[in-house]
Length: 272
Image (cartoon, rainbow, N blue to C red; front, top):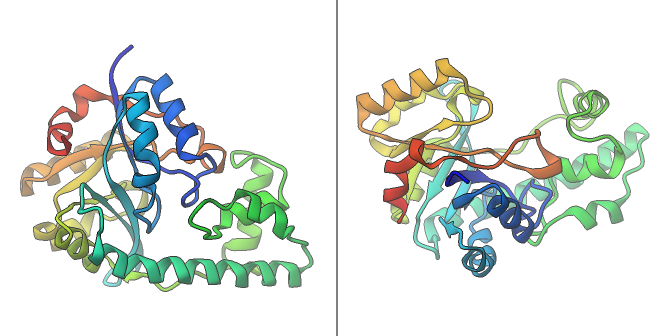
């Protein structure tokens, strides 16, 4: 089996469905030899997963995906951090308030959905919330919808509740993306722009390349045009490329973990 790498995987420490052990078992079955959990706004996953990763023979890379915002262009930005100091004081200072705001906002959304006329089974919510104890929209949807994430009925209900002028629309206050980049660097990590094709984050790379180490090239939402853009930017500014499946289990799109290790061979050397 071809050796593979996956530097963008989520577990139930944030908005993924599966435990770290289940994710690692699936990754091993797919031939993944190097993996990074980049759960949203938490660095707790690495320590939880490390022992089992060693047992499965997977090289685990410390990772995080920070929820940020480009205030100049008024759009969300996701920042990936890798190989940072494990105590991560600067990252924690930014992300712990984000997690608190996320959880409180989700509780407010549940109240609004119930006021709208839909009962939310809090016991069902609690059963899917992971070790970090933070409620995400996926946990709420799981409690009120029997359909799978990929089902059109799920999509319709999700958009009705959480998008446009839905009863649970709105979002938390995010941090400026440059603060996320700086925090990762301050904790001796490598700062990467996540899936710029998905969130249209290409322009900010020109603005902030001095704070950026890499750009995520291989992602399920990227195609040949994105590959070309990422390659051009990485060559222009001397950045490295990363990639991953953005796996969320049943809380996300149907994707297969793992990218051909030859495509990320030079990146893998940075993480060893």
